[in-house]
Amino acid sequence: MELYLLRHGVAADLGEGGVVRDEDRPLTDEGRAKMKQEAKGMQKLDLTFDAIFTSPLLRTRQTAEIVAEVLGLKDRIVVTDALAPGQSYSHGANKHAKIFIEVGAHDCSRALLVGHQPDMSEYASILLHGQRGVNIEFKKGALCAIEVVSMPPRAPGALLWLLTPRQLKLIAES
Image (cartoon, rainbow, N blue to C red; front, side, top):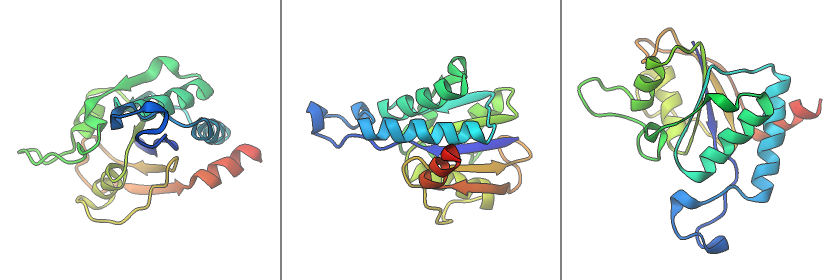
């Protein structure tokens, strides 16, 4: 299975435009434009997804919607609390991130997870190393591809690539 991790685009700051709650922060106009370009880069890479899982926060939902629109996958968005900030690792008996269990319950060979920092770095670390702590930088709009044998993961995955927003933009323009 191929798992793609995408950090949301550039969002408004708290207080900007009257936004008082973190979960209500929208993408800025610049953030929307950049994400659309990055999604066009994904399109040039011939990426498609069986499902697009997104955090319920506005900026991540908007990011997922832009990607889905560009790739023609609007019917594949799954909004899940498992991608809300701070949900990256379960300390229960199974020791798996909640989102990995949810993705495993879907019949996916390629899934996109749209979320937040530091969670995206922690997911990548867990998938590649089996635990948190690997320092992987996810700029806003960065996209990472990891191949795993199963979901939830039973063994370390393989990093296929990690693209910065600038690299995705250059791909779109090529």
